[in-house]
Length: 406
Ligand SMILES: *[C@@H]1O[C@H](CO)[C@@H](O)[C@H](O)[C@H]1NC(C)=O
Ligand SMILES: *[C@@H]1O[C@H](CO)[C@@H](O)[C@H](O)[C@H]1NC(C)=O
Ligand SMILES: *[C@@H]1O[C@H](CO)[C@@H](O)[C@H](O)[C@H]1NC(C)=O
Ligand SMILES: *[C@@H]1O[C@H](CO)[C@@H](O)[C@H](O)[C@H]1NC(C)=O
Image 1 (cartoon, protein in one colour):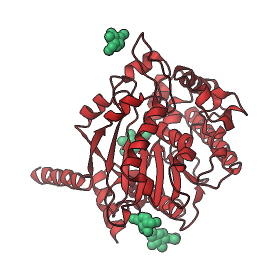
Image 2: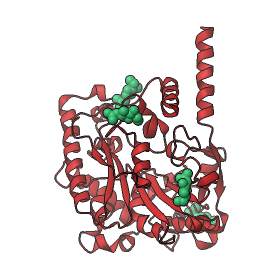
Image 3: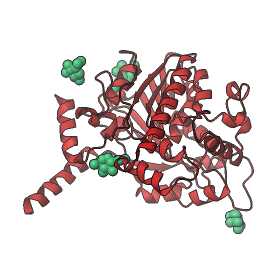
């Protein structure tokens, strides 16, 4: 018992050490004068970990995700969470954010970016940083200003020296991955032509899949976001000129027109989309199955396989139509979000999970970013969702660190 306890304490310390990169959160008060505020009117927040050594002029900027609010009630509910108020964010994280995965200052798990300037932009507008409504909704005091937040934080990063960057990477996960696709070309304009600028969208490819069950529901989600946040005239004209503007938050209508190099990390069994974007009315059965794959029956597995087929055909067609070359890592682990967690960006590869072309996500991204090699791989062999989580996290971490160091 005592030995077990000691082992446990030791493991916790080990996790504490490797996860110790904690970065102070800055509340950007100066943004308020520009009207760049969260849903509740509080200033936006970010965390910046300065670069050092030969990473001093390289910048990696991550946009946080967290779905969207689809109506006034949902947006109002968000003001009491980190997704609608920097006041709540600051308190919730006790003033500091853990930087993990591709943002961690540990060269063992993050060899390509560990000493870069790294920035985490907190998501508090509910519109993937797209909204820009002048008027505050007087009935509820909600402000829809995501695009202004994006601009105000970029101004601040330029003030901190980002304009001198030799290398820059805009990335984001989930709703932040979608924001990355939407803002990528605009991000590029912040830099000199000689700067290497690329974008990395993690689990941001939310499919429309018009012939797959739930298409109406998926259209509804985004058209509600678009109307609640007044986005119709703010969406890319390259999309709104060719399809119904209400479809213009679906990456399958956006990615083709992104000119800046873009990398997409996806699961063809994306956990969030399968759980939330297939059925509007989620039954207890579907909820149980999507929370624990061992509880799925054969019909449910068939629905998941159909999702994957739709995902892969949508993705493949989009990439084929793209004006610039798209890098991608599309696997079959049943997860959502990778790069802000070393378990999925790096470590799960050391136990053979989530490897494509013998590379972890971190290696694939590094090779692509630095032009060491292209990376365009998808797992077309596994047609079942794989549970790639690892119960023994401390052991995995140890293996991972040892693997990466060797
Ligand atoms: C940062 O950018 C410079 C200029 O391109 C490059 O020489 C250096 O290797 C980069 N540092 C890292 C850690 O990637
Ligand atoms: C909105 O904010 C104003 C100014 O802070 C306040 O006077 C008013 O009561 C608020 N309205 C609601 C509905 O919360
Ligand atoms: C994956 O496996 C782990 C460990 O057995 C389990 O705790 C978790 O619930 C599983 N996840 C899913 C979605 O089935
Ligand atoms: C896979 O990569 C590892 C190092 O990351 C290397 O040692 C091994 O030879 C590679 N295997 C194949 C089949 O390429």
